[in-house]
Length: 348
Image: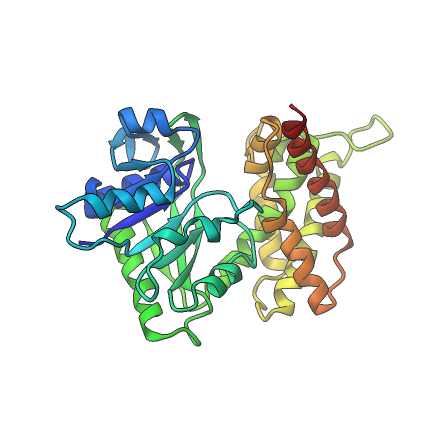
């Protein structure tokens, strides 16, 4: 039987824990929990979903650390194989010490365990591929608006899709890595969720980055949801004419910089047409609009995924000589805000 370790039991990890429990059984899923460890140990996880239904519950194995999770399965005489087939990382892509790639080490069996990254950002896979060269590294892009409203309790809206592919792309991935990607997609589908296998999953990563690297930091910096930012008054004058278009024009220009970087890396269809599609999605939303994850973190004075989402895009742009002045400014401002939260925690 397939065995899975889930690292990160938050707004993404909890629902995918439920999906995996449906696919392979609760005893074959172990979730590493931090802030919600006590509640998850007592009651497991609960999901309220507009798509799947309310009060959905699962109770996988719960561990405080990866080492604890490994010890659990090693000491369980009913388990026939003392290793994990997949380690699924659903934690935020933050620059921690030790890094997440290091922390999962005890659960990664060389040549056997697939490492699945269900995380935001671009250029996040290289560290894992370098540390675990004989293991499949699978990159996954989630479209899954959800919020952990209480420890171990997640509310999910109606959209859900997971795009999965090997890193590097399947054209240069070994056959066993491609098979691991297919097996993980099948696992997600068996659990009742939607998943698609991509030959090159970096294309949907860049497509999602158009939204993440623009709206996420801007909403965090302005303490506004996307539609609230669109409706904010422009500086000077009281006529109010074109207010929303000015704000949308700013976001559009940032998206166009991101699209230019994507095209420099060979993704020609991450273009102006796709940018305008994303702009129109925000334009027609009802107030107050969507609250991106960085805004949630900023309101809670938590570190934000600035490097993975914005900083890496700026660095990739520099490598290709693509000018991104607006994105660079946003990066420094958002990174400064995130650092201020870290300093405040250290001082307290």
